[in-house]
Length: 120
Image (cartoon, rainbow, N blue to C red; front, top):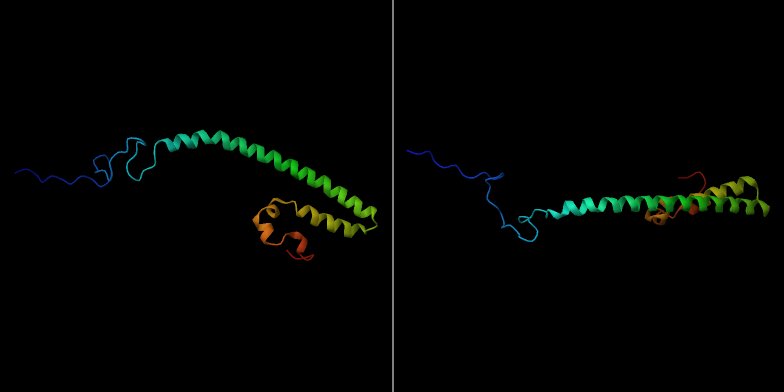
């Protein structure tokens, strides 16, 4: 007498397919198309270029903010303000150019200008 035939495995090469092969994407049912990996790999150089351009733009922005802060402090001192007060206002001015205050957290947290001195 012959041994009973085993059921096909649930996972692996002999497993039954849940859905037929899609001839356009080359995938079965819920699997991702084979082209997704190619698209991701093709997008890497674009992302590197974008990151480089954003870094350059950020450095330019910070340089302009620093120059503007020095002009701001110089004008406050020329107007007769005490140096310690001018320095404190300039620090608040510079803190507003931080990246975190440009984003949503800064907008929702009211930014540095509305904080009291000595409080985070």
